[in-house]
Every structure is written in C-alpha cells, then in structure tokens.
Image (cartoon, helix red, strand yellow):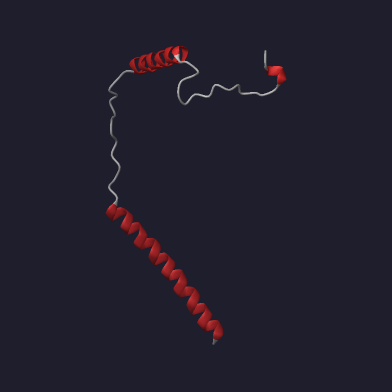
Length: 87
C-alpha cells in the first residue's frame, strides 16, 4: 500500500512538472512580442566621434598642465616619505 501511494505521488509530481512547463511556455508566448530587427543609424560617423574624443583629451591635458598643486582639495604632500626621497 505504501509503495502504491509513493508511486502515485511521484506520478502526480511528474505530471505537475510537465503542466507547469506547458503553462510557462504559454505565458512566454502570450506576453512577449516577437523580436523585430531594427536598423540603427548612427548620428555621427566614427571619425567624428574619434575627433570629439581626441579634442576632449587635449582639453584635459591642457587643464592638467595649468593646474597648481596648491588648489583646494589637492594634496601637496609627497607620495613617499623618507630621507631618500627628499632633495
């Protein structure tokens, strides 16, 4: 009798698993649209993008050269401490 109950339980679990997979597939088909291919047109050519990046890098380099170490928020202490690093 226990073997019969255990077998019935396993069969019910297997059928429940198959039904849940089927219900999941129906939900996915119902709620998700099919993907459509979209052609993306860039607003700029790659050369223009590279030129903009290079221009901004040049500005950053110029700002870095003109910056004073005593500006607020800047650390003016040496990165290494010790007698060997002092002049």
